Image (cartoon, rainbow, N blue to C red; front, side):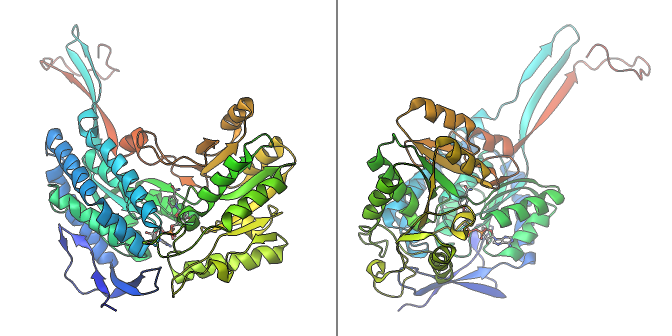
Amino acid sequence: MSEPRRITHLIDGRPWEGTAERTAPVHNPATGELTGVVDLASAALAGAAVTSAKAAWQQWREVSLARRSQVLFAFRELLHARRAEIAALVTAEHGKVLSDALGEVTRGLEVAEFACGIPHLLKGGFTENASTAVDVHSMRQPLGVVAVVSPFNFPVMVPMWFVPLALACGNAVVLKPSEKDPGATLAMAALWKEAGLPDGVLQVVNGDKEAVDALLTHRDVAAVSFVGSTPVARYVYETGTRHGKRVQALGGAKNHMLVLPDADLDLAADAAVNAGFGSAGERCMAISVLVAVEPVADALVARIAERMRRLRTGDGTRNCDMGPLVTRQHRDRVASYVDAGTKAGARLVVDGTKDEFDADGDGFFLGPTLFDDVTPDMPVYTDEIFGPVLSVVRVASYDEGLALINANPYGNGTAIFTNDGGAARRFQHEVEVGMVGVNVPIPVPVSYFSFGGWKNSLFGDTHAHGTEGVHFFTRGKVVTSRWPAPGHGGLNLGFPQNV
Ligand SMILES: NC(=O)c1ccc[n+]([C@@H]2O[C@H](COP(=O)([O-])OP(=O)(O)OC[C@H]3O[C@@H](n4cnc5c(N)ncnc54)[C@H](O)[C@@H]3O)[C@@H](O)[C@H]2O)c1
């Protein structure tokens, strides 16, 4: 067994060389082996990273738009060339199977590609009034230093939702990755220096609540982009806005999939299994509740259970369907819901804690679990489990299913499976979530469009990336100018008439 490697911050373009007062362990979740020890930033260090980013920002905002764009293109090329290496790091620390990790890096690349052209599109408007010699123009300017705080489940893709776009808009960034699997985020961040980004424009501070609090309260942080669980998203939104920051905070999810009786049940079963158990359910787009409209619930549950029994857990670098969960603690928490669901009276159809799903070794594995006859008062329904547990709620009609989904406090995404175009259209309009799939489970993020939910899945009303992201990372200014300057005509305290 090799020595755990030190994982530290990236400050002013270099790995930090100080001595950390606090650290956290990083494991390979497929083996349980301690592979790294990550430095946790003190509030003072996180604050110093912001101050240094602010100084570097002055330089970055004066770089020509063409140069900004070239740096983004160069980064995109480097990430593309290193995608296999970065994906391997994702699997080694997060545990998801390698094909999922590669898919994640590809999604990140797509958002970077969107950002590459943005510097040239940051234009305002202009109106001229020749008769009064007054011109009015508007511009969009960068905010300054933006803090990005990301969750463990997409260590590459989620930072990529924000970092390239914030930089494209002329900002500096202080990125705080999840302390559970920071390796891939840091490897990705290091590529920016190689791409020509001036030192200090992107800082990476590892850490936990102490570092996040320092960012949320620092006077030189202009905006915060956060993704994580709902309680923390709410806290970040409230604290950040109280300190005068612009905040977008994407929270947790409890995504439902509604299956109408006329649906293709095999298609729906495939989708439920893919979206329920892909990345071991550690996805904000995962389906965790299947709403089955009678009379097809029995047939649907049977099809899903049959597919689930064929899933194999294992080390994500090998040929398997589901990797481990990210930490032992998270695995144990998710596993506790198997017991909680049974005690609450749900019918356990497939038990993911059974030996048949257990991969060899000391990894943090958990097989897929299916509960039927779940009711909305049960913890398996109310809580975001964020693991491979799928709950089936039976309803009598489309209306009952829709009412259930709309009553749920989360509003990230949902899907409907049906062959009735009218019902699908009605659903798109009536359902209260941010992302809807029709005969597909919740769609993957598309970089041109923004990404995010409603209700308790989003605080701050601004979704990630896309044109909403551009708007979030810039602010408008309107300039009214008269040239030549009018001669001195005495004071006029009235509202200007001829401007
Ligand atoms: N809405 C989305 O698009 C989306 C995308 C990915 C993940 N998620 C959500 O993220 C969650 C999983 O990620 P996680 O477990 O890393 O989330 P988390 O909320 O525990 O942590 C997210 C980030 O916040 C920091 N943090 C944790 N506790 C904090 C506190 N008390 N104060 C300040 N900062 C704190 C962490 O260090 C991490 O960087 C799930 O709820 C999932 O649904 C949402």
